[in-house]
Image 1 (cartoon, rainbow, N blue to C red):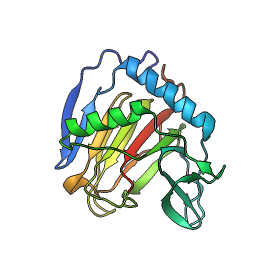
Image 2: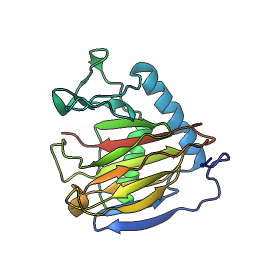
Image 3: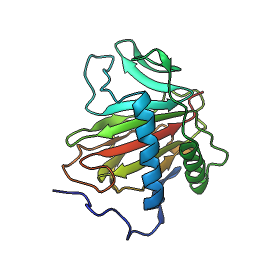
Image 4: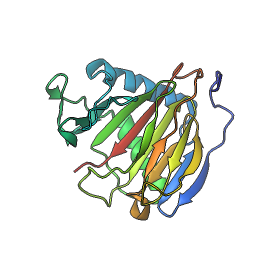
Length: 217
């Protein structure tokens, strides 16, 4: 069994460059703030539950997803896109909690991107075995805006590659409280998550949550 049953209180904040334009902010989120983030996630999911979306090719994603903010990212047989309504309810996505937006702006600034104001937050839940294949985030309108990715719960292996899918990626361990920010020359680099190993974490139990905050328009 992997994962830290007692949390990550002993880790110290540290900032590491991945490539030009991409930074790993280790232990950026304190344990008490992580608890507040989880409460906010639970409130969002009570309004727009997690679901396993289907790719345009008809494959069900292993990661369960939902959204909050002005826009939400969705995929189905019609393609990848942002839209203002939850397709399950035809209602607007829940508002983005101010805590999310404040965290995203603070992390982006720490990584060298000022004045970041996300309007979309994709919530991903990884159960053991769930993964995210190498992909680019390219459905947003303004590629000058960075991506801010927050890890909560079980540790995962983050893959950060190059401009082509075939480029060999770096493998980075992400712990609960870590944040990855990428933009500028790194904005369209391929990235993903290896299959999540089984484990238990004090914050999330037997899973990992990921918040990916973006400026979609």
